[in-house]
Image 1 (cartoon, rainbow, N blue to C red):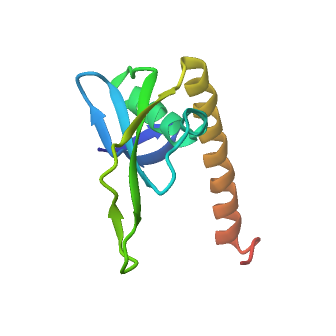
Image 2 (cartoon, rainbow, N blue to C red):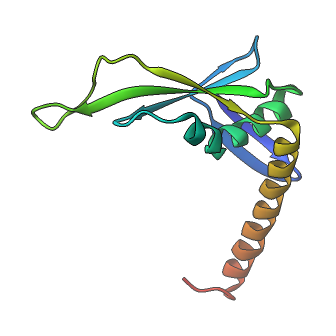
Length: 127
């Protein structure tokens, strides 16, 4: 589910693994050798970013999203495969205050990138 939105005069894009337009809920799939913990899921800022985009596009988003942690490992031939163990669904909460704060950070970062890009184009910054 790709979202491209103009936020504060800057184009911002995100591609969500899954999004329910009826429930306004985000679900992000993560394949991992070691199962995520609830603490790691809550600290994952990617879902906060997606929450800002969904709210901007649709006017509302559920505060609760989920990370779907899918167990994987290498087989005898070093090929990564699903283990067949049950996946874990971990909640992630993004409050309105968190979305508002992140939205301001997105705009501030976009401004900084624009200033640097313009300086690079003028030749003031060399890579």
